[in-house]
Length: 65
Image 1: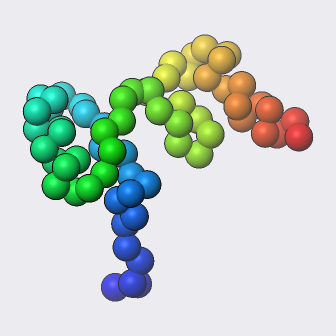
Image 2: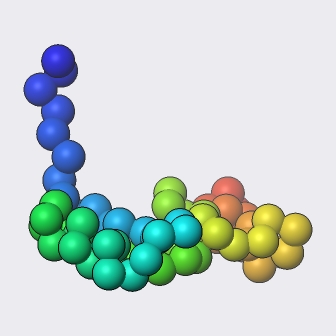
């Protein structure tokens, strides 16, 4: 509706309870990369442990500057 499109060249496909073969086939069909957990999104680790201080260090560094 808005005319926005997904840039699959910048996108990652990450597995959650699916076989590796299906993941690679889907990534190939969508022309995107295969990612692994944990990965960074908006500077925070997705799949990381938010109870650990190291998880929040990128945010602290951003706020400090």
